[in-house]
Length: 178
Image 1 (cartoon, rainbow, N blue to C red):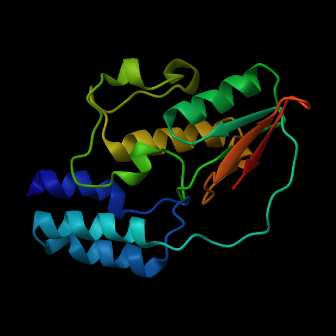
Image 2 (image 1 turned 45 degrees about the horizontal axis):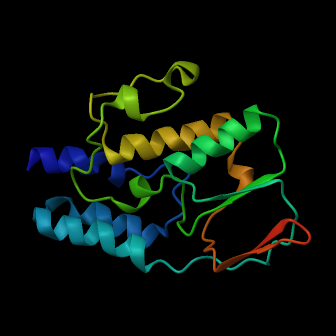
Image 3 (image 1 turned 90 degrees about the vertical axis):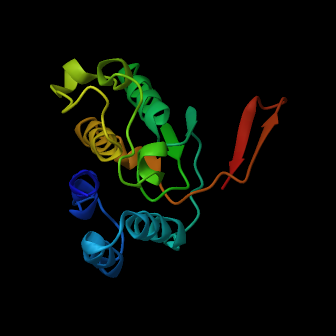
C-alpha cells in the first residue's frame, strides 16, 4: 500500500496550475485511507466529469495550428517559437497540458521509455528526472514547467475540442472550428 500512496502523493498535493474545484481535490485527499481500487475510481472520475469553463469564441488567423497540448504538442509549440513562428495556437480538450499524462492519473501510471530518451529539452531546462521511467505526475509537471519557462501557456486554448477542419484550395487556408 505504501507504493500506492507514494504514487498518489504528488497527485494529491495540487499545484498552482491545478484548476479543479476544491471539493474534488478534498475528495481525493480523503481517499488516502481507501482501497487501491477505490483510489483509482476516485482519481479518474473527477477528471472525466468536469464541465469545461465557458468562454467567448476565439476568431483569429494564425500561421500554425497545433492540435493537442500533450508531449508532441508542447514540443511543436516550443520548436515553432524557437524558429520564430509566433502567430501560433494550440487547442486541447483537456483542462491542462500533458495529453496522456494529464488524463491517466491512476496510481503507478508511468512511462515505459527511459526518461532521457522520452523527455525533451532536459539539458536546456536543467531538469534531472527522478527515476529511469518517470511517473505520470512527474511528466505532466515537467511539461507544465516547459510551458511556463518558454511562455507557451498563452498560446494554448484548453477545454477546447476541434469539431471540424476544412481546407480551401482557392485561399490556401484552413478553417478550424472548435
